[in-house]
Image: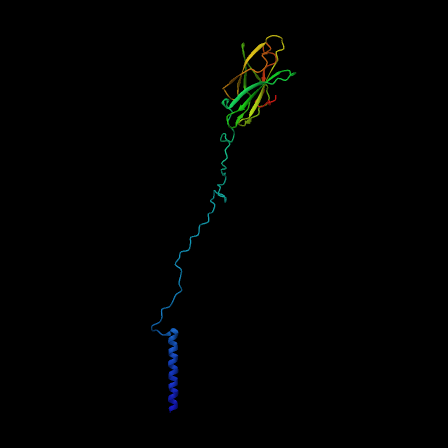
Length: 221
């Protein structure tokens, strides 16, 4: 009988221990420790800059299609990129005798020097009048082709005046002055005549006084 009571007591203690273990596993509905949660960061992530995409009218390089980028460069002339026309006020006009012994005609070379400080365009025939006591003698054009020239600042261009020598033995027509009007201009420059003192007198049917276009003569001619 004592043995049975001891065995019963042992079973009772084992059952009590089992119940306690179940309560420790959290199956008890009584007071329990508050569950813990993982800490989360409250900082706001840095914004990401948007990636620019080219619009329909723009290339990937940022230049509008069909457009150009400015280089800052200037042409110093008109909007079309050409230098402005040379005016009489832009030019220093001089004349010198360049007659070569043995030539059939005498020659005076007129120099047009650009003193304006900027490039300018010049082309065509100048107006040339020889002044005499009897009146004014206008030079004729030689008919040579015209070439347009950009006359750089400080540079010169030249054209020639050819005229017959006075071999008649008479006084002929005495030349006293030279009037030069640059191409496409109305303002003239009057210079002393640097050539021979006279032209042969006549009715004008002989050798005429002729001029070439601007640029047709060199400095040494």
